[in-house]
Image: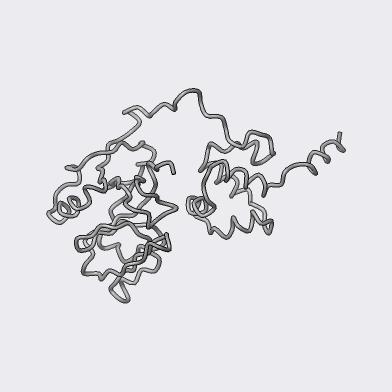
Length: 237
C-alpha cells in the first residue's frame, strides 16, 4: 500500500504544472491574478518557474478569489481543473440581494463632471444593481464604466467598477491603488504610486498599460477623487 501511494506521489503533476493549467483554464494572466490577490507578480513567476512553492495561504487565497477552481485538482491533482458550471444559465441575484448604486457610463462622464461641479446629487444619474455583500461597508459609492485600455489588463474597456469617494482631507494619503480622479474638465481612472500632494503639491497618475501614458495634476486642479475598490462587471475578451 505504501509503495502504491509513493508511486502516485512520484507520478503526480507538480503544483507548478497544476497552477499553469488553472491559469490557462481561467484565461487570465499572472499579472491579473497577482493584482487581484494583492501580491507581487514576481511571486507567481517564481512559483511557475520552479524557484519557489506556493504557501498554504496563497492556495487558499486563490480558491477564495476564484471559486470556479477545483480544490481537488489544485491540491491533489484530481481532474477536472475547474468546477463544473451549474446546469443551464446561472441564476441572477434577486432584487432583495442587490442594491441600486449611481452609475456613470462613459457617455455621461462630461455630465458627471458638470453635475459634480454644480453640487448636484449623484442619484440623478443612471443606476446599476450591485450585490449587497459587495457594497458592505462602502458609502458614497458609484459604479463607473471604464473608458479605453490605459489600465489594461486589469481593467478593460467597458468594465464596470465600484468606486468610493475620498474626502478631500484624505487625498494626500492615497497611494498604491487605482483611483478615479476629476481634475479641471477631465475624469480619468489611473493608478497612484507616489503621492506628492504634501511635498510638491501635485499628483502623478499612472497607466498600467505602458502605452497609456501618465499625467501630472497640480493640487489646485483636483476636484474629486474616488478609490476603485472592486470590479462589478467585466467584458469577455
